[in-house]
Image (cartoon, rainbow, N blue to C red; front, side, top):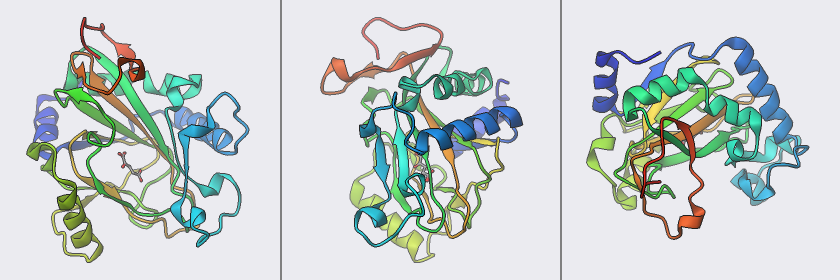
Amino acid sequence: MQLSNERVKRFWEDGFIIVKNLLAPDKVAALLAHAEWVASGKATHIPKGQLQIEPGVVAGKAQAENYADSLRKMSHLAFYDEGFQNHARNPKILDVIESLLGPDIKLYQDQLFMKPPRIGSRQRYHQDMPLGFYIDPPDMVTCWAALTDSTIENGCVWMLPGTHQFGIIEKSKWGEYEQMSVEGNLAEERPLELKAGDCSFHHGLILHSSRPNQTNQRRRGYATHYVSAKCRYTGPSERENDAMLMRGQSMPGCI
Ligand SMILES: O=C(O)CCC(=O)C(=O)O
């Protein structure tokens, strides 16, 4: 489903859009079950280095009911696992990405955000691109797929509309926005409440955050980070570039 010109224009103005019901219920249920199996620690084909534990658990200040509920996120799954890779290659997602980035698309990274019940912590305001995405120009769009309903109470993602237009923003400024948000003084921020199967799409330079999970239910979101295959890779070593072609073609001298 290609986006209408009006929705594409909206994306470039705001830096994000929501596409409701993009994923079929059976696909969401299967991916969620697969995510829970991977999170249980039984999936030996995924390197352990790709996961992060909730900071409260690491600091001994929070206790998780079980191993899965101690996890904050898992990364780079589609590069090792067919189930996640099939999702990343979902033509409905790639059609939206193509409307925004053009026909030649690579997957640079992915992150399964776990947001466990009660102890799932706040994600501070940040831009994705300066946190390890080595590309030029900044043609990067993330699809955040809701595997469960995502609400204000269980810690949905919040966006600061239009901030992708400012380029890379100094990290001290991220902290200022964060402070204003925590104090409830950031009137421009917008919650992205989603139903399971909805997807939001955001630009790699937009400032965004997410809140703690205050409920007894897990909030799961799987983010796949796409870049244009026409970007140059600007990372420290070409060996670390394992971006995967999703659609169209690779370009000589590019990522
Ligand atoms: O899902 C979250 O809690 C954070 C999402 C996020 O930061 C991202 O998709 O880049």
